[in-house]
Image (tube, rainbow, N blue to C red; front, side, top):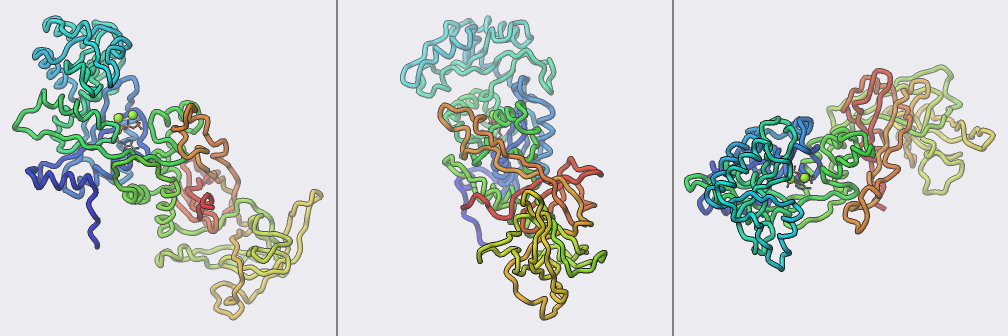
Length: 554
Ligand code: ATP
Ligand code: MG
Ligand code: MG
């Protein structure tokens, strides 16, 4: 196998290995905030971090960045773990930033003692105002030189919940004139009067992201902390906070950045996805229209298709929008090799074979998967009255129409060659029956001369008397715009596609009756479909994963 060239993240690691890091010092982490379900963007970060772990045989921690009790829930923790496992990755240790609340607090107290942090008692609006602009220096807070003793006392009170929410914050004392706005005395702690999903009411102060992340990396001795590009300006602060606590004997983590991955015709932000759920635009986080891992799973995506997708787009230094057709390509590739074919008619019209004996049922052999020699054959009932797709018939058609017309021949898949003869219509002129004749010598696979005859079209069909009605949920893009959340002065919710879901009754060949949730099929000539979890003994429900061809391509 050809060696794939290193990406820039791997170059950073290789360089570090050349200049002093030992291989067994490498350690990575994936750090989700449990404030929603993982989405396809997270899949990129998961594949990156866990992929590095596999490549360098290094541990990868799953660390929940759980510092905001107002937004985080156990449900999200559970879902995140389930999704990472489903993708096929194993973490070394399950960690929580909240495990480090005491250590972080002790370090903060030490910083106050060292004159490196102070309690500010202004409103957040005031603090923001004094920060200035990148081109003008900020103004120091009137509390900046508060005596150490007073700071310690107030911090203790904040911690014990003896102050009001928002009354005080703890700020690092860095530089109010720094060209990097994040260095202008950033907030380290705020008080939140709410139970946390793990620490309950033990803590009333909660550390901010910047104060938490690098220190957590340090505690876990993570060597490389990879995050998305918007954190580039945070790196200086990450390093400053580490300077306050790092012991020379220990490994000092480094933050490096890669580009966020965006997918077209959707939104990849937990906050925005939460809005879709809260407003009932979709039916929950795992709605098959959602770009969440659990939504994609329910839609019929496989872990391999998602990992192949992440690998094919790779890691980059510049943000870009990946067209969703790229993701769809990967699932078609994967399912084509793996899943059995069946015949299902979604918009039926009756086809009657006038010269086929009435009351006769014949069991035909149908190949399950031409791409897989081990997939075998199944039995398929054939009879005088069949159902075919309404759009597969035209009374009169031009020469490019390779489906059924009056006077022309087509093959019925796995069955016989038929010829269109006549139609029956209702009072409104709608076709209710198509009549045809069949060539009894043309049976597929019989080897007869007639069976080898070339005809232009092949249609899928089901035997009307044997067909099983199934519910089929046809999904389209969730948004009508490629990048709905970047359109000036408009809210992404305005671009929700009102036709993202169409529900129809389909008629399946009877082999389907034992299908269970998550079973996947190719409905011949139509696309890939998966059995939905809502399926019951009374009703089989399918989700369309993706049509066979990209209908948007032209
Ligand atoms: P969101 O805005 O959806 O909440 P986030 O970055 O705040 O995203 P986290 O839970 O903090 O979500 O993300 C965990 C990790 O996944 C982080 O390292 C983050 O940078 C990475 N990540 C999140 N979204 C993407 C994306 N679209 N592409 C690549 N990596 C991502
Ligand atoms: Mg985050
Ligand atoms: Mg977020």
